[in-house]
Length: 425
Image 1 (cartoon, helix red, strand yellow):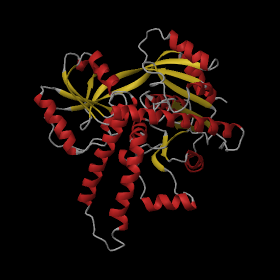
Image 2 (tube, helix red, strand yellow; image 1 turned 120 degrees about the vertical axis):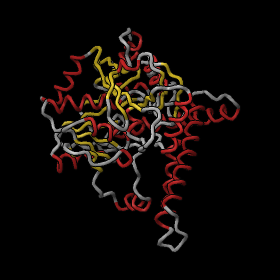
Image 3 (cartoon, helix red, strand yellow; image 1 turned 90 degrees about the vertical axis):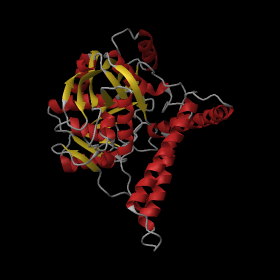
Image 4 (cartoon, one colour; image 1 turned 60 degrees about the horizontal axis):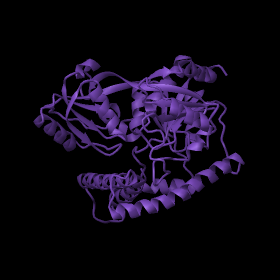
């Protein structure tokens, strides 16, 4: 994420120069095709850097250069930890302001970067609230959504950002594509009816817009645990059972966004990716960090397969004994591929891209050809990946995504109580 953020910033500057500044200054005009090629080249460069940094952080690289980089990142992570705690203290003593907007606010987030299965939990919670009569708006920052031109972003920093948030769904119609909205907001808007989805880094501004213009009475902050500007009534924190604390280090040396002791701010802890086995030791760790929060165990249950292009559906049992290719650009591809194997599929080919990778048509064609050569009968991807696929006319191997929803294994009453606390208070 750190490498990608730096990369995107550089790419945005180059795009602004080529497409916006060059023409009015009378410089050489860059064609749209050239700009797109530049964009693809830079995306690959940024993703290569991100992969390298992840390999260093997760200690998959052990050469001297990687060891030196880990030492530097470790020092930076101590500074990051201090900055995180000082920021929290500033909010606690009111040097930084918490905004309240006069409605119910629920935050859904995590302590680690990516991979906890947050989007299905946001969907389940928003759906439950809507079914009980709440007018729900999901507020997302829209990670890796289309960025505004550089000039506009600079002006916004100088004179203030007065533009309204991007309305992905007004609760009735889907209004933006995945490129404009970002993967998760687009998925949520596609799957949820009667729920508003807005994208803006400034969730206070987005919340005001949702209340004043779209008559929302309940705000759900997607990835909101670290967003302290808007005061939340409930904090839902997700922890991955298979990897609860990442590699134990804070950013940028590890994947923790803040020290694990800050779990004390959580109202509810959702332990995701459970399989029904005992989580006693993890539960004890959580209890030591937060004696009051309710602990809810949940699993990601596959529901069905759906063709990315035709919307044809097949039962999940269709995978049993099938030779497939697995295609993903997510934070935790291992878990996705293991779930396919558990469902009885035989993976004969696997392609992994960087998290949030935006696929080109040629990349999809290459995956189809490689899968066909290895005898795959079907290509299986994730729903989050599917929203980033360009249209491909010829598909010698069909491409389906696996639809997944959250199932509460233990703590269903606590989940219902959480919904009731919002709906009836």
